[in-house]
Image (cartoon, rainbow, N blue to C red; front, top):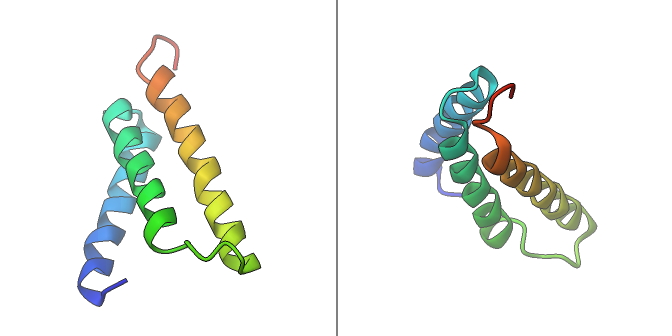
Length: 79
């Protein structure tokens, strides 16, 4: 990850986590975080033979699944 991208990505992650935690714009935020998770798997954790990177890729895949559920049911009454 280039150093020029680390600060904006960190700000994006914190802002998106706050928006999801507060329940604001949950569908948009969860969709953006879903795409971020898939891109992280594709670009950062693509050496599946390495056990550490394989676990990280599976972690991001599980997060992506949860974010899809948040996208599907996030802005409903009682959520």
